[in-house]
Amino acid sequence: MTSHHTTPIEPSSSDGKPQAAQVLAIAGAHFIHDTYTAFVAPLLPLIIEKLSLSLTMVGSLIAFMQIPAILNPFIGYLADKVSLRYLVIFSPAITATLICGLGFAPDYFSLAAILFMTGISVAAFHAPSPAMVGRISGNRIGRGMSLYMAGGELGRTLGPLLAVWAVSVWTLDGFYRVVVLGWATSLILLWRLKDTPGRTEKPGSLRSIVPKLKSLFLPLTIIIFLRSFITVSLTTYLPIFMISEGYSIFFAGAALSIMEFAGVGGALISGTISDRLGRKPVLVIATVVSSLCTWAFLNVEDWLIVPVLLILGFTSISVGPVFLALVQDHVPNNRAAGNGLFMSVSFLVRSLAMLFVGIAGDAIGLSAVYIWSAIIALLSIPAILALP
Picture: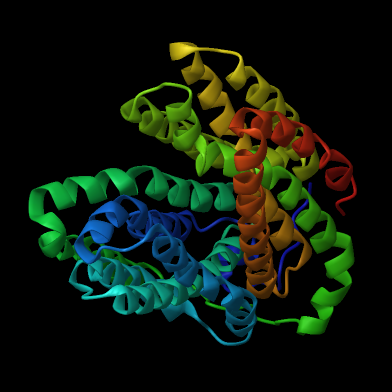
């Protein structure tokens, strides 16, 4: 599948050659940035104990961090007009500082404020950075997106481990020392990206995205929604399901790490393969395999679960780069705005799916939810075939 390019921005990308060092710098920053956001879940039990919070309060805290995702299309639109390179450069330092300050929060409202500001920093990084990667990946947009997404997946895999280690060594009050990594990352980005363009040379108007709403974003939204049930069931609810099936907490946690780790490998490969095979075939194959493996997951026991989880992680949570590459292909003059719109849609759709899976799990049990999720995911194939 051919990539659509913007007008050449600088000599090094005008010939379609990827700028590998800069792509790797942004992918590495994505890794460090998302490592910090992955600290929140494992730190919550300690924060609950310290401030005696209810579970409802905890749920609302997570929502505070998610709300700023609504800003993604606006930040993206700005990023196409003016260079928001410095948002990408300094977000890792800002996110790290805010997350490492959680231990100092004296009450619920301070926590909510810190997490809300963290959400803004997260949006400031995630809206413009894939667009920058798209521009400097030349004719290898899929590979660029794979490296970028694999960085984020790896951060989400290792973040909880680093958080638990840091708290066990320094306690929640001394946990702030981990902030060093975020600041170091921003300094490296400042050096590496000093000549990298932060915006499109000839940005299109937002009006130029409107025709794409029906042809590209409508089928994409349907696909993401129908596939979300599998990804949400397999990430957010996996430990709860494993424990309810009689597995130890350790095995339940390990199962999630195994799947996230396989997701890193899948993210690295899926975008690159889609540059060769085309975006649609890769999405169809991943959907069919992950549905079959979800059924297999319910019918195997003990250590046989491990290979099934590896294939599931590889096929279910790894197609992000293909979606991002699709958006970059079709809105070459509004890369950041297109990406911001995609990120907002993903966030809203995923939140909905999380709610539905929770309600359905209470009503019919998680086993039944897994079976239905696999069937629902298969319904996304006509929408995949309808993509431009």
